[in-house]
Length: 395
Image (cartoon, rainbow, N blue to C red; front, top):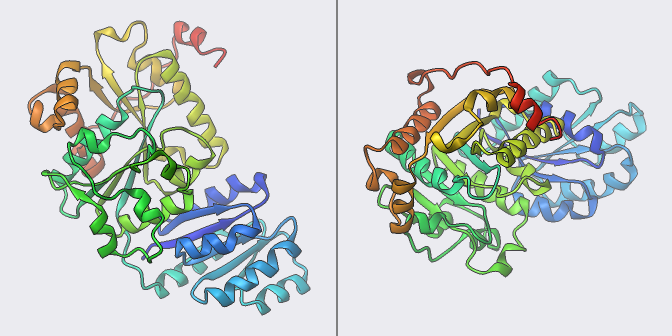
């Protein structure tokens, strides 16, 4: 089934998690924008090149219907699905007369929504869009998110045949290009602000290729460009990249806030990069809780523990697993000499320390993602010990 790009409009904060959980059941769905103001819907529809607008009419259908009706005329290829708790025949008739494709009543019938999405997928002319998006989200500054993103991309490139692109979503201080020692001419800002429709040829002109074959989309050159890239711009770029690659690795979002929700919706896997330090583990705990409350699929979030070694102090992997009630997906040993030399020389771990334990761990991480049947299972979480219970009791 082909990828279906969906804009979600919803002004009811309490319904957001319910809607998000419903959509995450459908593997073919890519949420490209979430909107809560009717006035900006036309702009988002213009920028996102979506297939479906999922329109939650409640609590004020009269404020939403006219704007959505105008979108039908402006974007005839955009299928609009209305959602409401109302079964008022006049409201349903008004929506259908405006050109809406579906009118779904709450509580949502998953099978009915799935059937409607399948019809759009069959009609879509987009490429398969089968790429996997992997987001690396740091739980504190300096935990090694960029190192992991750059080197994971290189290892996956060596394993797959469909291409890998790594994207820097730290718009101000991102260093993916520096870590891979490439000098891009264009950045994500050029794609986000392009007046042309994003196609493969335009995107490929913006990417710069590393000797490993990994392609890089760098952060903006100037700070001022960072403030004008919207979540819809970013997701539009990423969904186009997914149609061109087997894997898209994103370094970021660099903080967990409202702007990160679009990336978390889109990501197939979110790697939470953690160190065995109380602030990092505590932030991981808050992020996982926030994801659960927001309706995100917590199974997509994986724990990547970096710099594990004798200097971890009183915290252990089993302590952390018990605290977070989640198994470690992959741990990476501390090897600061190899890693720091690689960073300073703009080399990958495969170049600087091909037989090092840290490089082997990143290879194992790539194998877990690309060929999970060849990777061993992580152990079950340990019970939280007394020390960790005390440390995190006020988290």
